[in-house]
Length: 136
Image (tube, rainbow, N blue to C red; front, side, top):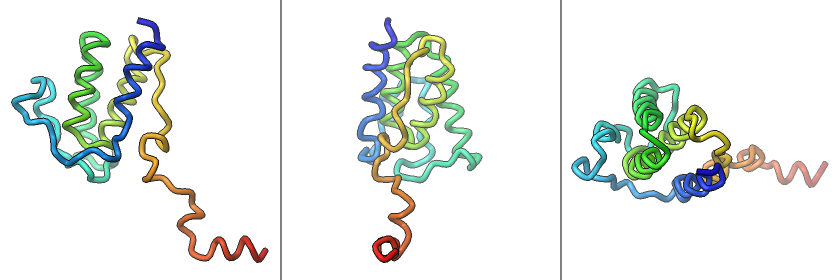
């Protein structure tokens, strides 16, 4: 499958992640390889510097990396999207995409496009910034 076709299948995984519900796919409906995932609640801030977060991210990465083929990878990622924390999902899928041989040439959207409401320019956080720039 050409990289362009793979890219078209990957991009929907990263759309509307900031507006996902807190409801998760029930364990009995999950692929058995994803049953242990979902410990970090959705909506919680993910950090790879928290050991518990990193452990779950590593579990998801290893599952995605070990997928039998690209179609299996997509199927697992689609299910994981409805199970795991959204930040953890982006991190693990991005790392798996970078390392899988069958994902060469496939790129991840910029983080500001994935979570547009989470990233603001620094000037938006500085009180009085607008007034100073108009005076000076």
